[in-house]
Image 1 (tube, rainbow, N blue to C red):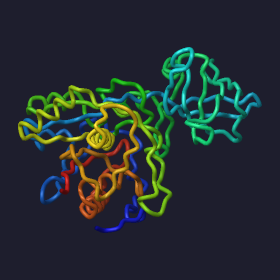
Image 2: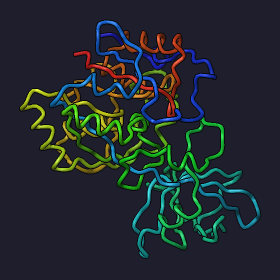
Image 3: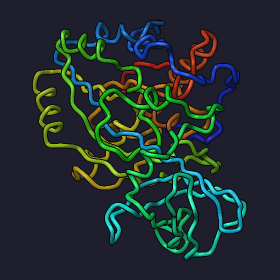
Image 4: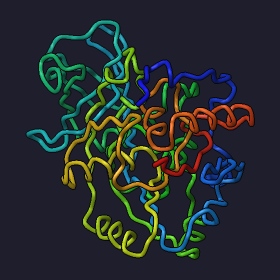
Amino acid sequence: MRTFTVSDFDFALPPELIAQHPAAERSASRLLDATRAQPADRVFRELPSLLDAGDLLVFNDTKVIKARLFGEKPTGGKVELLVERVLQGPQGANEVVAHVKVSKKPPVGTTLPMAGGFTATLLGRWPDEDGALFRFGFSEDAYAVMERCGHVPLPPYITHLDSSDDVQRYQTVFARHPGAVAAPTAALHFDDALLAALDARGVQRAAVTLHVGAGTFQPVKAETIEGPRMQRERYAVPPATIDAIQACRARGGRVVAVGTTTVRTLESWAATGRTSGETAIFITPGFRFQVVDRLVTNFHLPKSTLMMLVSAFAGYDPVMALYRHAITQRYRFFSYGDAMLLGRAD
């Protein structure tokens, strides 16, 4: 088996192909169909014609929270928090784990006045004293605070400040369970009309939940693909989804994962048998997929763990060729960009 390095997953991307805004209509994005002998350039709303009656689409129904919060230190220095997850504290959901952007970290016990009229008290590092994240106690319910005065946690490669359009479009139409700080972006292309067309085609639907963390945007710094370690993320696979997968198998249908987060959730469940918990599954070439037959996914960052996942799924050489095609054909990349439909290599 070929030995890969992180550099194998690099590619040159013209900066102007990084989508800064979504398409005018969700399903008007482009779709690179890679399930045929020759890749075909399509529009995303054509997806139903590429699936069969009895196939099962599995979505991630996590909901993006307005996780970016601003405040200041008692000395006046600016502070930015990016909430990674909400914890249940003594007063309810008023404790959070967050990334902190500040010139100098304040000492434990410091209470920070935050924009919006609440305070955040630094309680320590997380998950232990050597952890990279920080635990804060808010003076109010964390979900209420974020909804009132938080900002959409747009990815670092999107350069504009969040707007009312981002509040709507950096969220799937079927988002249900708050907890993600990054959208499951392959699902952003689905709108009500497309879902109705899938229903009419006889394509079934099910959902899992994986609360996407900010670690999805972190570059891989190791030289070998054995080096990276995935950030732990919370997931759940409902009994109804397990039943839907079993029924799909029984009728000869295909399980189509919408997004890499859905892949990671389903394959974590298959590998462990646990229907909920935390996963740090890291999928690289050579991984044996047990559940997913097809994948709808956006175009990912160079040298990222997600490039490794899609290469594991559809084959390294085919994926790199598809990326070259997408660049030549001026597809739009990353969160607000276009998508691919991939078949499993094995």
